[in-house]
Structure formats: structure tokens, C-alpha cells
Image 1: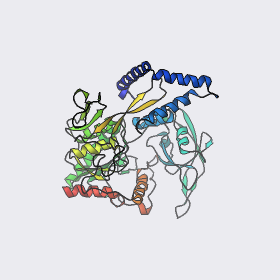
Image 2: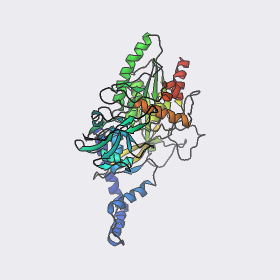
Image 3: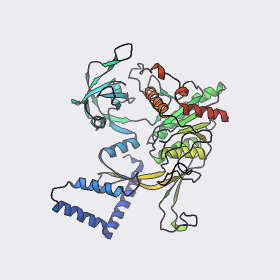
Image 4: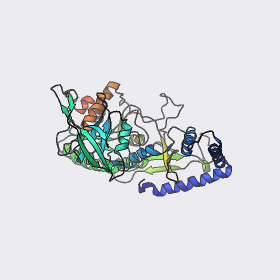
Length: 465
């Protein structure tokens, strides 16, 4: 894990050890060890102790909420890679196409070993270190491609070639490529489309005075990526203003499941000059409640209030935040904050309603992590975000709802078309500046024609000016 949370994690470890010792004095830890010892000594067949421990963890966390978990092995690596925005590997996004059983490259990561080796979107990976991928599960392919930086991996790769005017394609000759794994850094802040050099074009095609920033998750480098995007957008919108065009900024959080709370706070701070961004509330001490049903006095759970600092980017540019039913957690913090402060309108359909904070606590022996729900978010308005088990669609006080007149839920077909169209526009061009894969004519549309929520957001901002 990076140094960002070293002090906090050490504190959590000490707290966890103290808590465990206290439980031992109460007898729970001693009884647990006694049960494991009895199974080890007397059960009919030998049982792996790690398997018993894993089963015990499953049982313990099944009594908690669905966001708390014991995380180990590959799941731990995935979690850390998501939050750190880096991993050891060759840098490829993969899929398994329905038309064949092989594994296909969706896109290389810009600047990665795969990109430098000339691997491009549409290439098929036929074998990894001599093992055929014909029947290999996708998760296994990722596991084999990732690894310690500096370690080599041998790929057998075939490029797809157009075979006829009907755009049918066949595999070209296979070629063996030896790649050396590196630390691959992933992006969380995306624009409208890729340029030929792989960088992002932030201005929306067909909307010269409108910019879009798509945040896919909140990780270690999200705020830095956003600041670079804002710097580029500021320059472009200044040019548009000189041409008497009113600027618009779209912050797209659709499909964003969250990430680091600190990253979400930093993102809000980019656009706000003052005020509360979010508050988090932990468990109250004691069991007494005030007259309103909430904790009071010394028993009240302390609020951790995060506030904006001086200086806001693009302060004179109207904003819209796009949300959907998959916008969750840290992404909901951003949407709720900008909505409550009147900094942005919210467009789309109601968000997921995941308003709890999970603390990451490593076990002392390094064998796994505890992902434990320890607090909940409150909007700047002090309204709740979290959807509890007994809440339904008629309840108004969970999630983030669009502004009045800005509600729009796309159909399933519209969502699938948009996702396919976006995948093509997000592809990293091969090294050397060669043309990226062309879009089918039916999909060669400007964003307004493919994305009804985006079009509604741009229109809603301009109608309010």
C-alpha cells in the first residue's frame, strides 16, 4: 500500500490488536482457538487451517453489511490496484468475443509495455507463456499477465485483418512477443475521445464551447488528473468565450462505483471556494438518544467535516453532473456536494444510494485486509445518502436525485449503444500515431445523437443561462 495511509493504518492495527486482546479476556478468542484445535486434533480427515479461517471470516462478515468483507489473495490485489491506480503487468484491456473463443485486446494502456510493443485494439492473444488461451477464463488470463515488475512474459499474438468489403476479419500470422512487466498506471479521468497521440480531447464533438470530464473511479491520482484536465479545458473555454460562445462543463459520474473518500473531497475542492464538502459520522458511544431519535450530548457520534479550501476552478462556467443507478459512494459524495452548493445541476436518474465508509485494516501478518464499514456520509445539507434495507423507491431521503426537469432514464438499448460507441472512442491508438479503429458508419455520430442524457444536460444548462 502507498504511504498515504501509513499512520492511519498503523493506528488501526494497534486498535485492532487491543480490541482482540480485550475479546480474548472475555473468552471469545480463546474459545475460537479451542474449536480450531479440536478440529485439528480429532476431526476424521485433516482440514487445512487456512480453509477453516477463511470459512470463519465468511461467517463473521455474513452478519455485517454487504460492503464489509475479509479481502485476501487476488481480491486484495484488485482492490489495491483500483485505489492505487497502478499494477504490475503489461497494460492491456481484454475481452472474450462471442464470435470466437480466443481473448481479444480491447485497448492497450498508453505508454505501457504492450503499447510500446505495437499491440493494438483487435489483436488476439493466442497463448501466454506457451499456454493456449482458447479455453482460458478471462480472469486467469489477467492473473498470468500481471506480475512483478521486471519479470518477462511471452505472448503469441495475431492481428486481425480485414478480409472483405463486408468488414469480416481473419487472424493474420501469429507472432511471439516477449514483454517485460512494468508498473502500469491507470487513468480515472477521461475526456470525449482520444486524439491520435493517445491524449484526451476534452471538448465535446459538435459542441465547441462544451467540455466533458468523465471520472470512472476515485483513486490516488484522480485529483491530479482532474487538475490537468481543468487546466486544458480552461484554455479552450477562454478561446470559446472570445468567440462569444457560452462555456459549459459536464462532469460525468455515470457507472462510477466510488473509491477513496479523500479523492472525492479533492475533486469537490477543485470546483468550490468555500463550504462543507461532506461529513462522516461514526458509531455513537453509549445507547442513549436525544428526543429526535438521534444521539445527543456526550453520546453523540463525532462528525468529521471536510471543507473546501480557497480557490475554485472554472467558477464562472455552469456545470452539470451526470448520474445513474450505478453512481455510488464517493461519486455520490461529489454529486451531492455540487448539487447542495448550487454549483452544478444533476441530470440523469437517481443514484445507487451507497453512503457508508469502509476503512481498510491490514492484518498484522499481512495475510489479508479487513474492509469494515465504520461510518456513513452526510451531504452538506446533512441529508442522508445511504439506502437502508427497508427503504424503497418512494422514500426521498437516499441517493442523489436529478434536479427538477432534469430526470431522464435511457432505455437498455440506448445504454448498450452508448457503451459500444464509447469503447471505440476510448481506444488508445497504436504506437506511431497510426489511425485508431474506425467506427461503423451507424455509430459515427456526435455525442448529442448517441447520448440523450448528455444532450439534455447541455440543453438544460443553456436554458438556465
